[in-house]
Length: 498
Image (cartoon, rainbow, N blue to C red; front, side, top):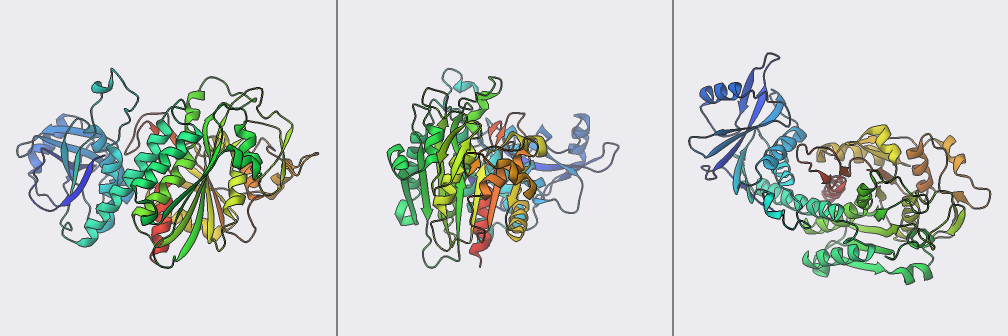
């Protein structure tokens, strides 16, 4: 991972990153150099000759006089101020484009602490690569930036230094989520997932940092009645697990939340086998589990005064002679019976078990589940906006405001009561699928059945945004994105302030 620094001194790096904006519809451009004074006349002429427009995600490189390379990253239309997400994405685009370089200084129009933090975060998030499984071609891939320096006149303040430290922690654990998602299912099973996280917890300080970890194996899950997790995982040679990571801050916690993440390490659809085309992306079906597990460790490293209980129900959904059959009835943790009409609607089954288990913790202020749950989410909101469903509109509104601060895109969706009847079963308490139209909402209604009415709950369907199958953009690479982690940490940070 890149080293992240902040400075207001002379630029010592060989690469300098500056902003570029569009000033009008006729191709006018302007340089946004932050706190660095540069001679723009000659440079602008060169940029015009090269066809630079200043549009978002555009990166233009020029040889410099005082530095080896000047890099201009697009900020879009010229403005007196730029949104935090604009700065975050511009910095990320530049750092992605600078793979193969050792160090770069970023001087973008960041006038306050929040803007400085956005530049630092974007630059760090963009400097990511995943080459663990490359052999003979590994050397063909340029390494990401080793050192990122944010240039700001605020550099000497303790708050600015702290914001850069926070950005580095956010990037570190977003990388962890991305790495887990990108790891092939041949190397990431429910068991190896728990072992990887146990190692991360240990390196983060373990009990000394307020972190504890507990793992249920398949025998314990079966004995204790986790029928959803067992039912989904029983068709695989790789048995299921339940991972619990808790963080308890020193002193009295101001709030206590439970995070629950769907952890299907590979989803074939079970006996409702998915089409081969696109099935390879189903290694990402554990994105929610990765996000909540990494988030609680990041919160611990930030020493936030909020207690977090994270739960990751982990299973591999495979077809075999032991797999759950359509029309089988399973008994969930807590006693609710489910007729499994579609074994490919498995995420809600493992989540149901974990949601009930999570609520055994007393005095929760809220519970949030994160899941790549439905293809209908992608149909409704596309690949960059996640859905939020809730039983508490105040909690949802609060979360959405924090998501805007973090730069993650979420959109509120309803839970129409009239769709609930479609989940009725003639032989069990409930079926695992219902009305096809509005399937994302039906899935949310299914999960709502496992939530106590008085407990504020959010369901985040991140099916599209969790895994980028298109081109890289901004600070977002191809493959695992790490979505939801930043807003979960933002929630804890907000509550920690009291």
